[in-house]
Length: 102
Image 1 (cartoon, rainbow, N blue to C red):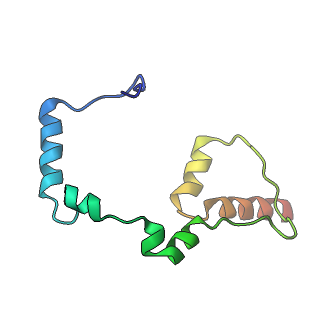
Image 2 (cartoon, rainbow, N blue to C red; image 1 turned 90 degrees about the vertical axis):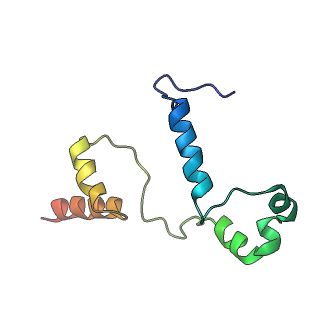
């Protein structure tokens, strides 16, 4: 059994039973039978193009224009930019650029 983190709270037996009941009742994600597992095939056999696409990684920049740094910011500053969703680091970069160009 894996070592649990100190603040881990396991569900009670009643909670676990309710979780399992909801899993069993979910029509969109039925539990697999032995037959399902026997008929399963690796994703690479089913859709090799999708697997290849999912494993692609962005390569090195041809002409690096950005530098990776570590900086400590106030939590409210980070929260403000993260709240606006994906691309928050670019928006933070743009805000800093406006400050130095003003």
